[in-house]
Amino acid sequence: MTLSPLTPVDDVTGDVWTALRHRTQARIGLGRAGTALPTRHRLELQAAHAAARDAVHSPFAPDTVAAGLAGTPTVRVRSAAPDRLTYLQRPDLGRCLDAADRAHLPVGEWDVVFVVADGLSSRAVHDHAAAMVRATAAHLGDWRIAPVVLAEQARVALGDDVAAAMGATNVVVLVGERPGMSAADSLGAYLTHRPHPGTTTDADRNCLSNIRPPLGLSYETAAAKLAHLLRRATELGATGVALKDEEPTALELPSP
Image (cartoon, rainbow, N blue to C red):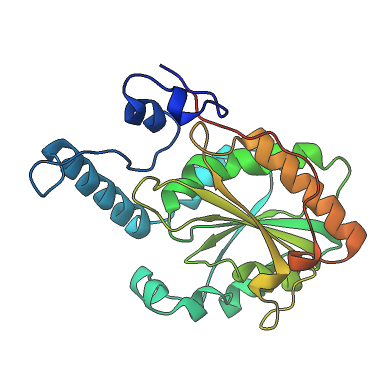
């Protein structure tokens, strides 16, 4: 059976939990075997935990993203974190560009630079980042778009350093989000207008989360929203708490 968003629970007949599970990836109504979860659900939980750990530790493959961006100029950089373990233990190093790589960044008068950062899920970046760059660029018309920066061992604030070094007005960081127990491939898009390394905070950013079709935001929906926010940020001269998303969006629900 299927439920519409307006179906009252009292009017639902049959297996209510089965119907609700079609509408969410959350683990709901799993039942029990004695005082524990049924074996099947326990094994599913362990598999999800393993997938989350793999996503965090899997190495970034910039060639994979570059191949998806064929025909689009790219440049590769690293953060100040020399390896994955240091990256996980020292978030501050993941927010700063390697000094040598900064010197090789092209400088220009760019309206926006896209930074593809591995973050905490390289899988998300490999699967979704190239498509998001292409879809968003298609909405930006004659905007001056900088070469796409592929950043290894990088966190969101690394985009501030990149934008300042390249002379970009706006930066969009496409980053692998922290895996959860129901999603290990979620991509986030963080938009910042005129960032200042070391002083820009998360309150100065706007975020689109859970970009991962078909179970999360579609590329087209996320790209249209991101392009709208970029234009509004440029008009307003700010992002973050100063920029409100007033554009109506239809709720996306996975098909039952």
